[in-house]
Length: 267
Image 1 (cartoon, rainbow, N blue to C red):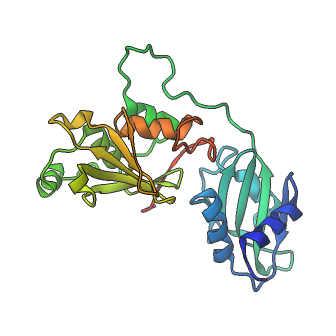
Image 2: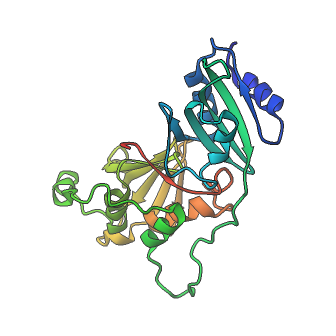
């Protein structure tokens, strides 16, 4: 079977709108199917790897995708998309043969999150704390021992404290498997007064405008994939919170993901 996005459309149409699964031809490359789905939905979560189910898998992370395989799943990747879970990988059929699979399940769409609930317009918001709440992050800090003095010396500038907290807390990875948090800012646009701290699969680059001596007040500028600079009157952690949950933001992820997480690449 030749795999294209049109083929994927046909397979999803066969599954229909409800809970359904397909065992696919054995000569199909499951990684190729995963890559095609990832190009639509972003990086997936891993529910099953080498036959072992993620112990944290539940209704909120796509456990319904495992039901049709009755413990025979070998490797399953999952995406949340609107009112559906989509999954692919491999599972053993009734004869015990490992085969590629495609599966969908109904998904309860959560209520939209507020950017910063229960605060007055004049009240300061701890945007890093809000980001932890939005992503449901409960793990220990991933990079608590970063030598920021050495990094800042190499870059020739101090860095915003909310960015440093993000790196220390989350480590190397991506919000919603899509927005990559750069571990040490890139200086590619230094001649334009920009320092890059994150980027997306759509080739948008998230930067600071490094104006002024107060690095904690550097505003965000997005260098879009078409080369346009789009300024925002906020700092990095607030910007991430807003694009995760505000469906009206120009660079929102809320149209594609309505539960939010951080995918740590080292796990």
